[in-house]
Image (cartoon, rainbow, N blue to C red):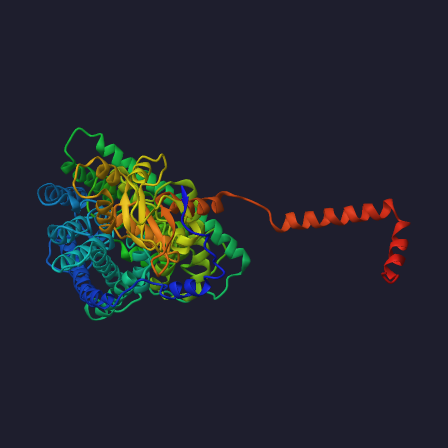
Length: 634
């Protein structure tokens, strides 16, 4: 290797560094976000209409199946007079769904959110238009025939499908299509529950996989538009109003919130394991998956015969739990019957959502806890447990807190909810590798991490990792020098070519240099080398962020870049291996454990003991030394 230049003096280069960093902003959002936001607003409005239609469809099929009348009013199946015939209703609905899934689109199976995640991560945010039509119909049939599901999952999937369809009509990037897909999903959830902020939180924690204004702004606007449209289409919120609870509940109740979170986390884990245990059971059956929902429908029908209130969405039971109007029969009916039929039906692959059943089971658990925990008012523990089980099961703590607050408009519950939800998430994160949403993706052979962090390549610059020595061609080199560089046993794969003033002309690959050496041509070799170098003038500056350099390398398939000053002088080289130094430093900071203040205190105490020991060994020398210090020097 040969030195490229004297080491970079950062102290003397402060002005250049400031000028380079001054061009970097906190965000990378461009004015194009305004266009995407306008499209997202339209998507939010469409999602509100879709939510209304789906709720009406659920009401229509519920009335047709259980009461043999034509009406779109949402009613409970509990008031039917079918007797044993009630067992056949879920089976009939499941048979229809199985046929729709097999001959229409298999994507309508499941509860919606994992399918939306898969479309975002693996499908380029493209959803088949058939899904936008078949998903709400199949979900309405499933829930209307007694399926123990909520409408939110299908609405999220359907709203996302419409957002994706709108995006596919325009010339957009995959990232912009994802933004519109998520905008439709958030709009659907906001319109269903009148929870605009929780819908945005759900989008950020589950669907966007980033926290950037380019996506957050359009999604927030879509959610706001859908909520405003809901006021005129469905009605205002809150969906489950409650009387305000105490502004502060005291330390004993707060400790009980921790216990509530632990119990909710345990129930979340049990439900997750049970759902996929039921799915494994159905996979072992020697029949086509089209018939699985019908088998699950038998279990749903039997459960509905013994406890009819377990059928359908069950919003009335959620309201009763939050109002404190519940009995032990309701609690057992939800925790036993509702849980069993929900687990079996969801494991069979039918169509339906998970949020409403989770809220119901969490509320029933809270009703059970209310008999042991401090009395803080009607519905206090059901509400805390609802938020905890939602945040723990979906691993979305902020969504769990905000969702519970917006459903009830009781801001006094903020602190108890925060404690319980975070505790439940801690329990499930430590006990289960994946959530009920990501486990489905894992079983399809994909892995998803949901931990967001600052990329270390974003905060480090080329000057922090570049090397200042390497191979370099200065001007027209001799054939012998070119041959030595082409066959040198070094890791450097690209060689900068400079003029006499050490300014970059371009870069030539060593493989290209070897090919030029072996080529028979009448043109001088040096001339051909300069021509090849001019074709690759990719470079990096010392003050460029490493993330920008990684993108440049990936875009051009190059693993080495020359580092140049603004005037073009080559001052170093940076390789893909050098960029890994930033990752290594980040890993080192995570894994290295050290005591700083304690170690310094121990060192200071040790030094004090040494000085004290020296003073005790020679006590007479101290006055003489002090007297000598007072004498004037010669």
